[in-house]
Amino acid sequence: MRLGGTIAGRYAGPGEWERLLVASKFRAVTAPFTCHTPRDEVRAYCEIAKKHDVVIAEVGVWKNVFNPDPAKAAAAMAYAKGQLALADELGIACCVNIAGTAGSAGWDGADESNYTKETYERIVASVREILDDVKPTRSWYCLEPMPWMVPDGPEEYLKLIRDIDRPMFGAHMDFVNMINSPRRYLCADEFVEECFAKLGPYIKSTHIKDSHMDRMKLTTVLTECSPGEGELDIEKVLRSIERHLPADAPVLLEHMETFEEYQTAYEAVAAAAGRAGIAI
View 1 (cartoon, one colour):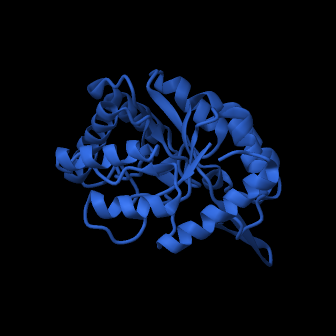
View 2 (tube, helix red, strand yellow):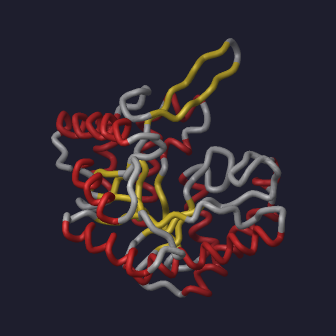
């Protein structure tokens, strides 16, 4: 697998990004550019990645296409199409967003409307619109699972794939985001294996993280954390990845703030891979 993440730290342009890239030891990264970046700069980033045998694994959207403000929702849809078109032009396999929410609790917020029939139909229609307008041939549009938003489990993701019914709709794997109940947390080994076994043929990129559960009297709090800081068996996670994904599949760390935090997480996963006899 190609272990990597986002290049954190200050950099002004491709040259400084290259210095951090080499120091990171990453073999897969998120795109350091968008569809609004000047094309000569985009080309420079791509040439640097190719020079160091690094795959740009994801182009992110991270916009709410169901924003209650119609103008913002339209802008988000246009941006999603622009990001997918850029990913397809460059041959970047995964263009990823979340499904979206019509609620008022932020662009990725938890809201009861996230689970209505009407919202589900909007998700299917919006993804179809993006794919039908862009018509990608080398990049898949994917939705990152969320704890409180469709898709929030492997079966829900498979249903979405069937209902959207477009060959260039793929799966983005974030198993920690789907560990959204004590049962899934306590049976995490089996759940993670289920995720990869069911979604493996569709997965275009994977986020690797850890999970921690606080037991507070008669309730629980589930928290995402860096690999090695929670209770997931990272060796078993890596074995599931190895069983179900291609040998060069991108596996990305995320949500760290600093270069040093990414390095600590990278070393934790690399050490787990070493113990499991898995090449990265």
